Image (cartoon, rainbow, N blue to C red; front, side, top):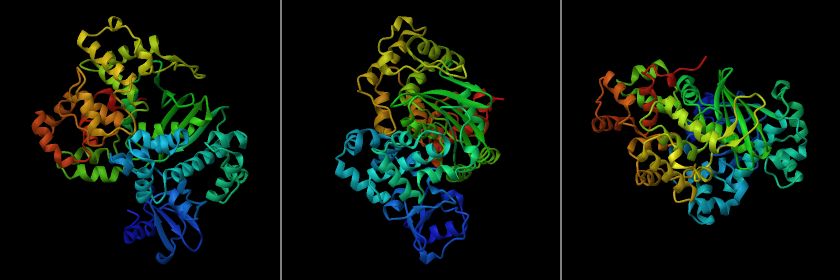
Length: 489
């Protein structure tokens, strides 16, 4: 979008928050860059240039605006819609792969040369993977400076910097303030009152309807791994350097997030996965506009605009749970999952009580005894085959997954039909166009709305909803009185 100067100028002059994260405005006369909705008086069009990323602005010599804080904008929704090389690379960069494995590791995961990755990412975002990762480290450093009492040296290494000097220089360059000045300027209420707990706000594009989003997570919560407590969804997180516990609660204009991490280096990854879990980088205006064009869906969208797709923090975990949920009730699926957690999960300490384990990895589940599973033999075979393929690396599920290829690989597994493959594509892989025409809840809702209820006919009708059919499923599911559609008290 940043190449459409006229459209960008209109967005800036109208202070349209819908475009925050889509592009950034760099002001030639002041040397700062802002989000489109910056409350400051808009500069003259001749003084504005537009960039596709904060990293591109920083590479061009601009510093972040202290008023609108463009580094805290929601992420671009484009990376969650596309499945091409650049989109997959951006999802991996957000997950901290460049910081942990370098650009060579990023390229290896994607199956391309480092030169190809550099060229394609730079062409779209105006900055290479290293610059994008650097901008992300700066955001993480700012969060730690403003929301914790950690010493600056600890923050430098936790944010991913190789030295305190590099940390200081980057913060000054990006924010035009020293780390100490950032901490001094931070609002007094920003710091958490609990030692070791980081409190922050996760922004999103309005509107956001939280009922089915949090309702789904709470209704399907696996005991010991997830729970709903005091108006917040809590769960354990398995992270690259350790583990964490997060509490997420819907608030007007943001999601309140409390993170307790065993290693602060995991902050960036934890935030990225929480945003992905709640689908916070979606563009609800674009989604709802497309779905509202169908008269059958118009009342559903108008009643509760801004529905999100509840996703996951661990793709392999969700795939295992999808198999456990085949042809059984939500309660039965939770029971099966809880037994696996108790038998094979890694214990963790939760100061607040309630959460006891990390969900077991495929490697940990590879040793399970099929005869100990209280389910039909065919489903045992499906589960053990899935776990084995995940453990030995034959099947990879992650932010970098190619959606069509992964779906085909899932369908090749014994016991995997279209419903299981598509629900994994929708909620684990993040495909916004995944569709469940055979799902009983979808078919019942379609019949009640006068839509075709047979899978083939409904798929044909749903072509008009593309590329947002996964969101259409959320609106169709919401017509039922199932607990997944109700925000818990």
